[in-house]
Image (tube, rainbow, N blue to C red; front, side):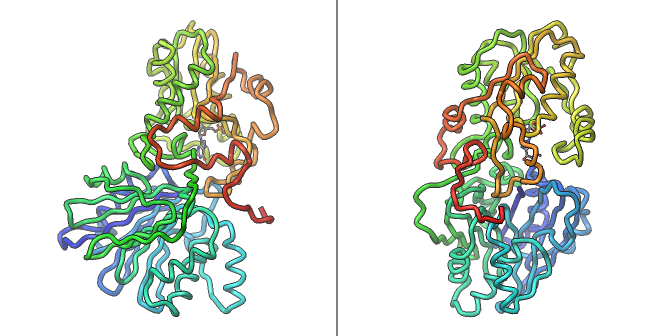
Length: 455
Ligand code: 5GP
Ligand code: MG
């Protein structure tokens, strides 16, 4: 999982690096491991990137060193420990037409195979990042194509997986989305002269931009002083947006492919209440994903939803803690029940998902310690059973609780009085007005593209 953000402006007074900084700040939830910005100034591309959160990586003097008229930025999420500095995006490289910068959200599942072939061909790599494989293909095809768009069109024939890409070339700011539209990408405009490409619409709001539209699955978008050009690279029949964008990843104030993430979560809560009602005194959502779902559940079941669980604002995503003990402590530091709201009450506890079960198990215990009489767990997505190969970190999915255990066993292990999940049909219809279909392989084990054997 990552966030990408690109800006192009005809207006010389626009500070490109600063706009990207604000955009990345708004996309911080999509990746906390590293951040980077690359900006094009005439024939050169300068960059600044490092491990850490956006405000840690960039000081104002770093941004001052990045003047120019177009640029891209990236925030990266990965749970598997140390990521080498060289892998931090955007990647900046020199190719036959000049400099290029590229940043991606997604996962190219045949990247290793392609890398092997390119290496056998004499190609040299500086990183182990699959994005560099795309750059290598692009530069290779650029030699024999008239325009960069032709080389992109060639490249996409070879790559499989999920990708929402932003790129800077000597001429364009480019946006590209895979033919299934697995990861989101959208376009905005600030004051007519400045264009933005972003993983999420909430980041367009953050730079005071106006949302124009989503980049469509399989679409290549090229932006320069002439405005936006578009090319459809595929004949897309069925799209496959990751359902977890609506369940968990995207900000609730984003609109993804036509559907409000907030509304999707509220609807999921309502559907959950209809499918699995419960006699209770209070509904409490586990922030952030469960908050909107709890709101919907409470509305539908006419039960109050007090702010019964404090979430420490200064703790990021606890999911990436290295071991089980550390994860439990992380949950305790992150959340604390408000005792006066739960003492003596029958509580419905709502979360967006159960992965390993650490969050819910720890919170059920904490609620009981705070005096809750009963704790009924309701989950706003179906059992998470199968690994994801498209960008959601698979290593952290190694202990998927629902892959080996049935509902009763999980309920007992977590220590709840009851446990129910939203149905598959329920979660599919929760994102109203969605213009796309969903990838639900983590629930079904049915993947939208063939998964290479090595996985
Ligand atoms: P568990 O504690 O069961 O292992 O994980 C479930 C919690 O992690 C839920 O509260 C959910 O919001 C969050 N979550 C679900 N998927 C992901 C993910 O891919 N990354 C991160 N950081 N958190 C996740
Ligand atoms: Mg959560």
